[in-house]
Image (cartoon, rainbow, N blue to C red; front, side):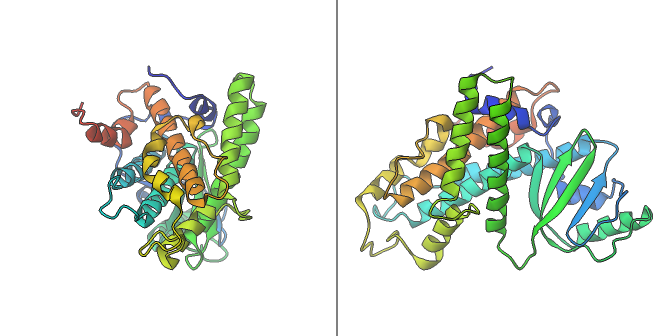
Length: 329
């Protein structure tokens, strides 16, 4: 077993219970699982929330695994496609945009590893939930609304709790980052209360998560949408002179290429605090820390599969082996 980051040690306390024992290739995601209608409804849904009960946890855990693999591979592949020797040496716009999306995907993977999938529900899923609700005498008083939902599985209760984050008309990225920040706040607090961690590990882990959380709310964006704001301004407003003619380009931009692969570091080693006056370095370091956190948690979970080859070995870990030229196993 390879050495594990202390931050991964701390996060292990919050894994979706049973997910580490999911093995093999998983294909059907949560939308497909809902469409199969193998759940029960004992409380009438309302317009923005519902509760589903299950008899068997494994198919649902496999659905989470399938989503984790898809989205973590997207994060890894996005970083692998960044040109570290761009044809135009001063061009940094696509580096910023790609780094954002890789971190966004990684954050989605993290929340699923912890039991919450954030995804848009479409009419097919809403019809299935409504159909089963009626069969159990729990017809919704008003139609269940579509949009972005946080769907959390509690294996102990064998229940899914789902609540709408935003309607389809609102910004899904901002809604997700708000939810992600709330999860970081909760985990940071719980880590410090843990009796199973050393004081040093608990303090270091909580501090790093708090630093990530602080940067997500940088520049008075308390809801945690700073990364999204930077991406939008670079992508749509061509801000920070990241596009030609680079009139107000800062010298520190030259460092961005050098730090592209910092997400391969232990997240505790990534400096998040010494970037005053260097917004794009703060942005990059925060994205790298989120990606590094996703990576170390994935690697840790893969090592702790007791039922064959971990599902992670068919997802981002398989992709990383390809990038390193390691033969399939």
